[in-house]
Image (cartoon, rainbow, N blue to C red):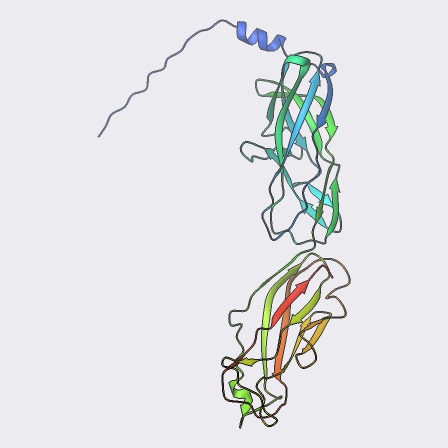
Length: 308
């Protein structure tokens, strides 16, 4: 077993450095201003990662000194308000550690040195967590307060404050989970070579989330054989079908004998976002003449459109 021993080593130094630091401390009336670069955020899409917005905070003073920066919020996390509430955080740009606190003394601060020209600055970043499905539109918050402190040992002394106005927006977007078995097999719907309209196949799209009221769209063409033949007055070389889709208050029917595209006349909801929604699609073949032999197929596309 390895042995170990501790040896204490100490050096006594003069107090000159501490006296200089104390002499260099700024008082409240030494701080003349707090300013920011643009605090307007890029549009937020809850279904894609958000790149943090870097903001430069500049402090002006009457003389050189060292300062600390933190942000006071009435809520944790702070929120921008619009149609809903959009959570965000203000962080050290170098490490993504939060600089926000709600009372008492801040745990983490950003250091600012007031240097030549009697100004100093530091970069912070505004971060928005992904996955906040809220109503689209403009969001803002002016309640967070930037606070400048003098730090002496572990003691922070508040010198100056300024509100930090933020603005952003939430885009119109939708996302849903594709069904695990998206293929509908209508072999059983063919009887003596004829399509049977009463044979219905269904598929469901789960976990539909949208930031705005949306339409349901269907697009597709008749089923065609892998090896096309020549239709005759007696036999068909294609199979038309009828597809219907429902998403809450949005309903649409596509008849491929009439067209290749259809959209719901109304949206799934009057206003706001939706989460954990369901889209159900029912498909049946249309009656026709006897079919030429072959394997028939088609692609039916289901779309949720928040930008009609």
